[in-house]
Image 1 (cartoon, rainbow, N blue to C red):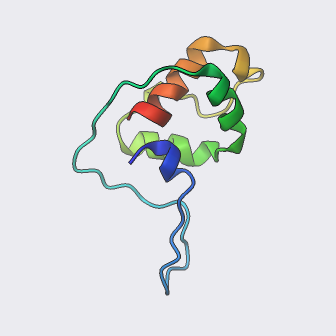
Image 2: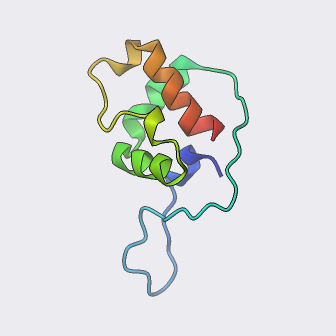
Image 3: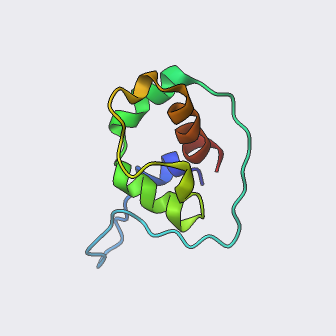
Length: 91
């Protein structure tokens, strides 16, 4: 499951009191290259729960790929967008 999907999932199981964010206990982590699309990322980042993404990246061993907080004018920073792309779409 890609972290972009994880960021939007919530549990609706009966009896679950805290259904978001879902915890990740990965037994295997794969990285698959995906074409970089900065326009998509610029539109998607404001829709994400950034803290949840950072937490998920940390649980998969990719915390160093992301800053703890969004940088101002992040949509103009290609290096930042590439790091987000890697974690969000390739891990």
